[in-house]
Length: 492
Image (cartoon, rainbow, N blue to C red; front, side, top):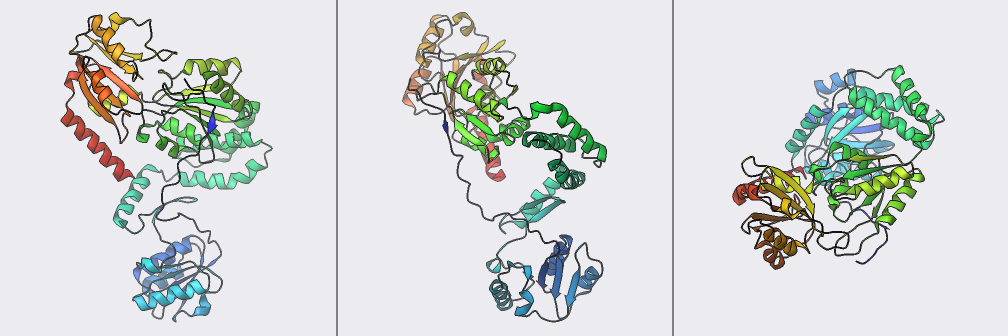
């Protein structure tokens, strides 16, 4: 086996963005709006709500506009009963045009750009430097949704969904965070302590969204952070299960761990898309171990993990599937405990669970299986383990899942049949389970090694064996997989 050293890996490049989401700070700044139609009036209200000083140019202002100017949401609204002039753009932070025709839109956009003012002409994208999206307002927590003008109704539907899952009370906690930030900075807490304060704040805000934060909340959070003392500055290790590959199968706890990590140590088997959920500032290091390719020594991984934690880093050891199943978690937990490093485990959906779900097959069908067992396809030397309990493998009422058996499936099948397992027992090989490029090979125990040899199989491989798999229906499973793929594309 070729050795390799842990190495820093770069996350995938940012996918192309139709729009760059930006949030303008307009408090006390001049904003110019031309027009009096419904779209222009709505933009006036929106700008005033940010605290902007809105200058509206309309020769015949509507009653709705005048009423809004008399009772603005926040920033003052001044209505000028005339057309705009080039000089009106000077000193403005933003310009919005409610223009009725192309000629006026072109003139308005050109005048704004000559003055160096970002411009938006309502419903005329080619004259816009920026676009307005659907807004979820929990100010100072604000969420914007854009479809680049392709499907505004879809954007509004997404906004409605976000409205339903973001309690209105978050606005009060976000406002408290804004007012408490300077107090936290002046509290004398270390960097690690301040970060721990905000982690505790976030947990409390989410748990108490139905009430307003009180002064006692700040005092309790500060006292709690100080009570943790040096532990807030100490590093830690989290063994996090990345699941079988589909990012939607990450647990909420796994996402929180990834978003709070300083360093992420990544296995080769982890799907790259999982890192989209990680904190972008986190350092990513590849410490992969593969049966046939270059691999890092476990001792080196342990040493790196411990040294990073001792330097105060929050380390996430990201593993495919569940870290407690064939993930060497026991060795890494023991190494951390021996050095006094706090360590936690975040479980993940196992590869076997993911594969069974995509196949729409119960691994423990009550008429076909009495036992479910996971076995490894290779020992430390890469060969089939010599101490298998072949009697349990040959049990006709067991469902057996073999992990990482690419090189040993032929020998495994031979021994299983020699020990009494029917050669016609259903066997299904699943490569890259739950991923878009998932590969499924349906066979029998006798024929599977030849089928695998004939197919081009790459990526993480599982072999599922047992009578319960006779319930596999390729057509219905295909429908499930296709539906999942459509759901993933729609989410994207």
